[in-house]
Image 1 (cartoon, rainbow, N blue to C red):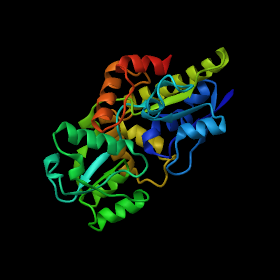
Image 2: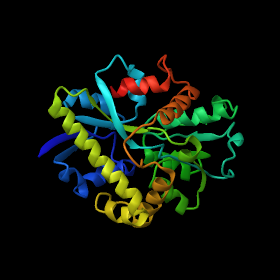
Image 3: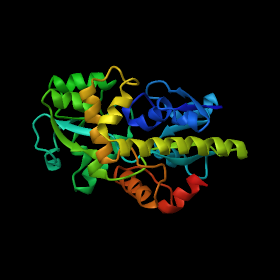
Image 4: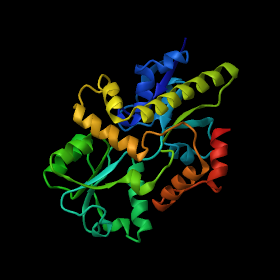
Amino acid sequence: MDVLNLVLPFRSLFYAPVYLAITRGVMARHGIGVELRYPPAGGDPLDLLRASGADAAVGGPIRLLRLGADATDIRMFGQVTGTTAFVVLARDLPPGDWRALPGRRYLPFTGSRTPLLFTRAHLHRLGIDPDSVTWLAAANAAEAMARFRAGDADLIELPEPDAARLIEEGMREFAAMAQVLGPMPFSVVMAPQPADVAAAKRLARLLAAIGESQAWMHGAGPVAVTAALAATFPEVADRHLLAAATRYLGDGAWARGPAVSAADMARLFAAMAGGGEALPDADPATVLGALQK
């Protein structure tokens, strides 16, 4: 059995297709053992991929786009998640009332700047100046949630299960960003261009196992997925796991398969551009082809 070192950005329900491919024995059936690695808090999985000699990493393709498709030896081999995982909660705003945000205090997700980039893009799309919002900062999710509970912010953006916990406490869901943004390759498998046929086959088996896991999750439904995840996330209450599974399956945050479409890449490009990110001087389909060649 081949043992692959796989880097994940951080430990999260968002990457459930990977965890379940391991714990349900799918990787083993494909002849793969997996050792998971994580960068330091706030670190870049691509940096750890290169520094540690790991075989592959999961992360946003935006990281590759920032490097430039022709300026890196890292390529994209398929998606793990099919859109954003983040939920916006508000203290006293009606759901979806984005035009009420100017002057409000907003706590973005602390672990990555991509969710904030996409939130700013959505405001731009609505004709709202993102800088009319007071963007706050917190050291980590626990601090952000404590500040929100204390009334130091009007809105907060979080993944599951933190969103479910605050909703249970009576906070109001303002927007599920997956529904706002639509499908896009939010997290993908990245790896160096395979040096030989054996390396290419190992990556292909990794993608096949993740794809099988994705298909099982969507076919099995939230209750079965909750049960399967319980051992990996014992610190999360079953009711919060179920809320997360229901949301992520329904919104497509857990992708149905590893293939990335040009249309979804174009949607990612639009969100990046709207948030102020510099983009390669090429159309999305061309960039997708370059990242996957």
